[in-house]
Image (cartoon, rainbow, N blue to C red; front, side, top):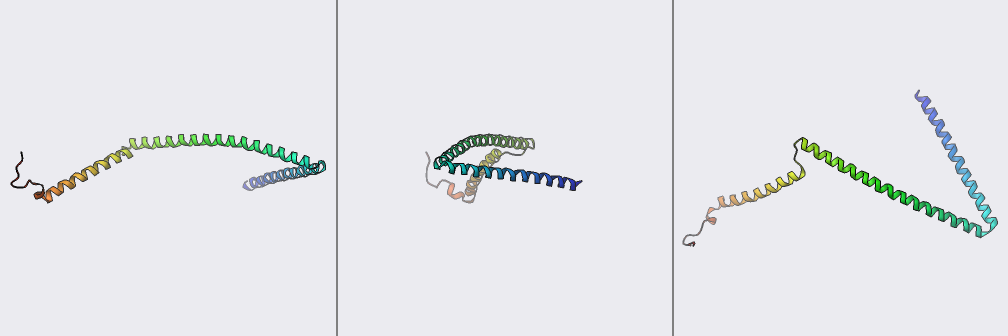
Length: 141
């Protein structure tokens, strides 16, 4: 059964290749015919054909370029929506699992920094209490 599928695919592939070869040959012959006619008519006909070909090519590029930019914009927009949806789903899953968010971790880190600074100050007071006591003989008030 697999061999038949491969044989059929090979037959289809061969037919496609033959069609492409025939089309390419016809295009080549048409090009040669146009070139021969241009030579018979002189340089003016050839120049005219070149100008028309260039104009068609420019129009095709503009049309394709516009379509391409439209497709790029749609793809970018779709990608942004997909990305936002993914981020929302991940955030929702994290909330359901009671896992901290980035903002929760950032806030906790800020608190830890503040507490570390306070602990350093308290440790300095405990280690060097004489430096923090008022000097004898000085009067307040």
